[in-house]
Length: 116
Image (cartoon, rainbow, N blue to C red):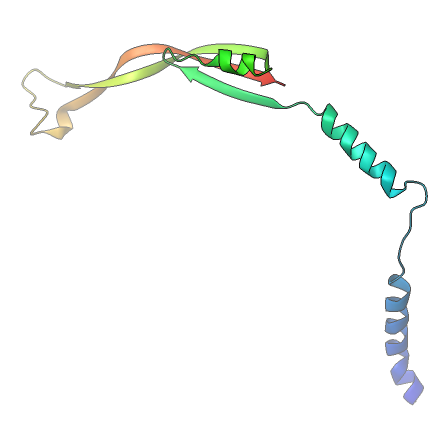
């Protein structure tokens, strides 16, 4: 009876002992793995997306640094906003509810997809 009560404990200890083996892989030594990691690291290409808007243009800095333009896109963008009165007799200083915000200057936003 005492052996029957200890049987699950013996099974549990046996499972732990069996699972604690060290695994060795003889097909791929550690030296080969380090070389493969270094080769993959050098072959990876970096990609970046940058945006310039409202007359800014700093793409030449990136091109001088070795980046290549993969894709260039442009879209219209509002650069500045201005507040105007909603009606002729509206006092914007006293009555904030009659103030309307409108686009003032509209420019272009350029989006570049770069790769190095």
